[in-house]
Image 1 (cartoon, rainbow, N blue to C red):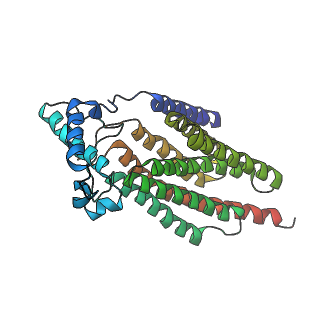
Image 2 (cartoon, rainbow, N blue to C red):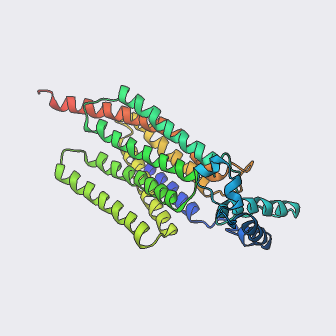
Length: 330
């Protein structure tokens, strides 16, 4: 029975891996290459971005305050205006919705570039904050993992803050912060799996594992930021690490489900991660000009901390009871 369960896990992971690497049917940057967009951009720049005798552009005089807060300059404002002008031309000709500069067109709300992804990133952040409060109240404090999972919480909070900032305003800096935070969360999840396997008794082994993961994170981020910003390489590394940690947790649960029935919450979380990840594969133009597949993926992941932290609470009680039994006199 145990072997059959593990075989099912391998098949599911293999299927998801195939789906993730399938090419998507999108016309990346087709919109900004059209003549309509280029003509619009030329005239918009000339009429709005050229400084007058006082050294001030027309755009600087009429720019709303909230756009200044999000640092929308004249060049980017022209791209935004011409994007919708071009889409209107596409709609009149009954053409498909194209991407612009590799991104789907989103309606901007008070300067926020991707409103749905921004809101749902905040929802994920709230979910972690809500559940860590429950964890602190209900979990056993007498195990090293009580403090360990607080570190995990801080890394997740940092990741979702970076995600919120990036989706609110996509700039080279916020993009790198988002990658930095996301990879930290994915890598720490794999690190947590290894630590849960080996425990904290062997300090030298724990130190060696910790040093390896810290070095791996530093090496990846250094190459990404200072050697070559390779989006595909970063994505492939995240997929590899994520697949390893999902596979590892599912095997851990399959081996222990009889004597630790509560691990069903861990298994359920991992299977839901697999299912929700499919939203990253099924790409489509934003519904209502706001909700794309990526934003709906963020929405779906907001429920995962509820199951995950409940599993962590049960696991701390199991570890505490195990410690108590081990210290009883014969």
